[in-house]
Image (tube, rainbow over all chains, first blue to last red):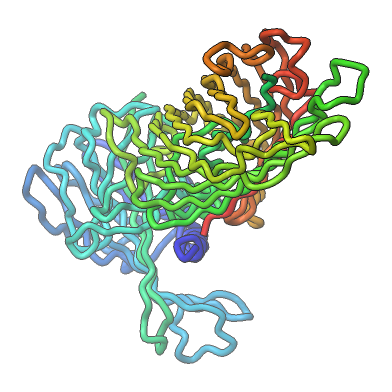
Length: 230
Length: 329
C-alpha cells in the first residue's frame, strides 16, 4: 500500500512535469532544440519560445568520445556537429504556484504559496541508431537505450536503462508519449513497447526535496528522442 | 453413491490488476492498475503476488440445482461454497496461499443438510514469463512487460480436517454431503495469460485434482473421481475512471470439467462422473486496492453418467452465482 501511495504522488508529479516537452529535431547534421506541446498529449501551443540562457550545457557523443558544445545564445538553440547522440540540459529556474497563479520565481518573496519547485529538463537525441556505445553522456538524469535501436520496429520492446548521477536510477517513473508505463527496477532498467513509427518521446522524472527557502523541491525530467522508421 | 458437488474450488487468486498496481508501483497509478491485464472470476491467472504483499480473498459460489424428480426427497436443492483465502508473495515469482472453505449443502426435504468448514488447503504458485526467453516473473514489470506471455505452475494439498463422517438423523453417511474428504487431496496445474490489443487479456489454465480413498465410519470405502479442468477466459477492460482509480472489466469464461467416476468399495459408483462444459459471463470492478467480481455460471453441455440420478451434482445446476472479493495489503 505504501508503494501505491508513493505511486500516486509520483504520478501526480508526472502530470505536472510532463506538461511540456523538450525535444531535439535534426536535419542534415543540424540540431535544433525546441520546447512545447508538439509531442505532448496535453493541449497547448505546439512550440513555445524559451530563453536561450535556459540551456545549461550541450554534449555531443561521437563513438566513445563525449565533448561539450557551445552555441550562439539565440533562440532556438541550433548547432551543427557530427554527433551520434546529443544531450542538452535546460533549466527554466524556480517556479512558484500561489493562489494567484504560477510564476517563474523562487518562493522567498511570495505569499499564499501552494507549491514551488526548481525545474531541470534535459533531452537526449540519438541520431546514429547503430551506435553500440550507448552510455550516459552526463551525470544528470538520462535514459540510455540498451536495445539495438537500428532493429527496433513498431511493436517491438525497447529496453532502457535510467541513470542519475552516474548510477542506475531505481523506482523512477518512465512514460511513453506522456503515458506512464512503469518504474525502473533496482538496476535502472525498464522495457517499453514502441507503439508507432516516427519520432519517439520517452520521458522520466524524479523529484527531490529542497530546503524550502527558495523552493520546496527540485523536479528533474529527461526525454529520449530517436526515430523509428517503420 | 450419489456425488454432491465437490467442495474444492481451484481459484488461485483473482486480483491481478490491482496487485500489479502495487507490484509495479508508480506508473501504475492510474496506469497499471487501470491499464494492466485483467483477471477472470474462476480461471486461474499466472500473475503472481507482489513480493512481501498479502492478499485477502473471499469467494461465494452459490449453486441452485435442477429438480429431476417430483418428490421432495434427499436430493440436492442448493449449495453455497464460500472460500476464505490468504496469500503471501514470498518473492515476485513465488506465492503461497491458504484457503479455508465453508460449505453449505441443502437437500430438498432438509433431512440431511450440512454446513461448516471443509478441508483447508495450502497452495504454492511459481510464476515465469516469456520475454526473449523464459525467465522468472521479475519484481518490476512495466505495463508493456505485463502484456507478455506469463505462466504459472501451481500445486497444493488439502488437509483433511473437515467432518467427513457427518451423518443424517438416522446415522447414514453420504460422502457427497460431507464437509471433508477424510484424506488429503492433491492438485496441480498450469496457467497462462497474455495481454493484447491494449484492453484484452486472454487467460488459460489446466488443472488436475486427485482424491484418495477414505474409509467412512460405516465401513464404506470411497475415492472421489479425479477432476480435470480446462478453463479459458477472455477479459475486456470496459472503462476506467482515472481520478477515482476505478476500473470495470467484462469477462467471458468457459470451463471444461471432466469428473471421474467415484470408486466405492472398489467398484465404480453409480450416478457419478461425467463431462460438463460451463460458461461464465461476469464483471469485475477495481477500486483502489480492492476488487469485486460477479458472474453467473451455466452448464451448457453435459454428458453425465446415469444423468437422471445426478440431481445436486455438478452439471445439474440451474445456475451458479459467483461472487469474489479480494484486497491486497
